[in-house]
Image (cartoon, rainbow, N blue to C red; front, side, top):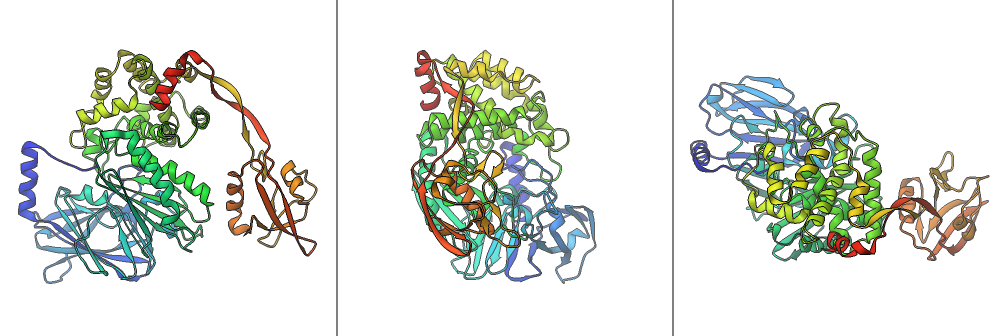
Length: 606
């Protein structure tokens, strides 16, 4: 994501910077009107009569054209005397300024994207929140653009903000005051690679090896604190660093967690977006703590592993990313697929989940991948992911893409007698390329073969560049793993697709339906049809937080205590009982060949 040069190109870039200086951007988070932030951009020296200012159409990591320029209003260009210059809007994201030799600055206002979700397709962690006096999610690509052919100039960002709010970011603040921050970036790509979240200070820091981790949280009601989630994230990141070994040398990594109140004017796209030294994460505030911790481990670990690829190993399409006329790489199977595989593999490797848990996850990915177009070549889909019919297959990068990474890992383990895997391959590619040396899309497969085995090339050409579905059974058998019937616990409040709870008409009360055969657990507790559930295990529940009840119950253990308070015919009744889980039989995976135990352990634990 950082655009770097060498040789003559570097000298030319430096010369251009010396001639025109840095670009100064000022942002006002104090005087917010109509849910808009005012931005002023001081122009560099311009020698042409016309210049175009762009706001990105697309950003790295999203693989969709989102047109951030749609959220820019009142765009004006001024000369040194404050006289307006003529501006022509070329498209949704571009403004052409006439008389550009006299341009002193441009100004505009930026709109919120969180409160109008449903009117656009921007993934929430890549969007903008403007909540005056409380929270600002500054994904910089939505606030700051670039002048044509000047993306390599340095940027200085001067932000005025309420003294009660603190800006969490991996950038260094050069201003010591509590109401003004000054950040610098060597070029535009570096600026947009560093989001900033302003909120009332709620953060923790810890150090893993030589890396400082910053966890910053915005929770609308204060329900979730940074200190609540830090132990799980610290355990996860220590495990990730141990798993990666010397492949990573970041000095700082920031996790910006925004928790949505789930109201109509707040974000609802849950997940995360990676950056070189940070990630933006968005989840509903109502999530039970256990479910939130589990989800954070999954998504943050995925984003953190992006430091390997594409941030560490990537093609020229990524390295020289064009924010407004993008050309996509063929290798999403690696950027997203291998990353997602690592996010699951490291957990079993470091003992955070069991082997059976890992097999269940891979089984689920196989089922999801099989529900999509399994004959569409992955390289073809990747290169054309911005248009249909390829765009609708993008989510398969997290399913089949991860399975491609798994099969490569198995194949390399088999050929090396368990000595090497796909992590070794990524380490080799990192040493060969690294963040400053991109590869040509067409050369990657050949380079991988040189680093591994001819059979790996056959796999890539057959199942990644070709239209052939992967025979997963054949790969699992190499590790002594075969299909088997397994039992998984059902949710205590759900039978298949039918819930054992409903909402009482005209209220927000949760009730047990009448005339419905209840499961053994609910019978054991003693609830009856028509009972209104007031609390479970000491916590009150209504329609507003019913999701917490259902998802929290997913974590209950067999034989643990369950305490209910219900309203039965106008009377408060306390009920107690043991948790009884019912199990559903499904097809899964099991290690069944003791002769391959050593190789399997090298795969999952090596």
